[in-house]
Image (cartoon, rainbow, N blue to C red; front, side, top):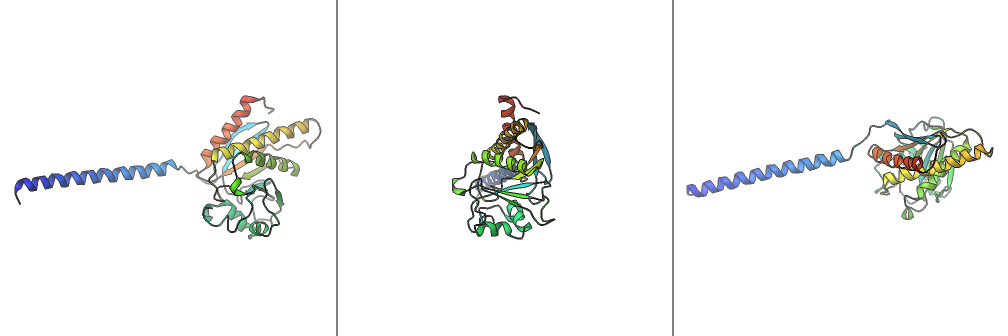
Length: 255
């Protein structure tokens, strides 16, 4: 083996090793960027996203079974076998609806599976949990209908129903969990949160009108807390803030 061949071999080896090192660095950087892109917010984090029509819209990183409120609202689709437990539903550790069902000893699944609560769009069911089962003394289920027909615009009406039912129950605040991602639906987080907010504010505006004309009790709902998972808090907040801004820019408020 002559010296020229050895020299060329060494140069080729050095070039290959350098390229491999650069490739590993690039892959590592891309992996870190992917991790950084999914920013998580600690559980228990709360933030007031804004106020309009006399009601504060708050974001909270918490599951529906652990949120403290006079009324907890949670949404469910029409039942299909194992829909909140099996993929594409979120894993049990991250699935708020699973935690809620477990806290009630499987009764949400039983109600849905047996057809006692079918989860049709805007169908409601009020539950009084056993003392200590949930942080909220009352649980309102709102149906989302057939998961195959879901779209984000439907959440405007869902938000309105949540506010109206809270008003009927005489509570001044409530927590809301859409639970759409828990069910494995790849929904647009910001748009869903924004539409829920729009529905709440629209219904709040109507309630204020009724109260001013002595057609409803004078005790208003003054706070709605929208729950989000650690990975979705910030993006949900963007949608909520955009919805609130649309009311500020379009019509005067009564705060």
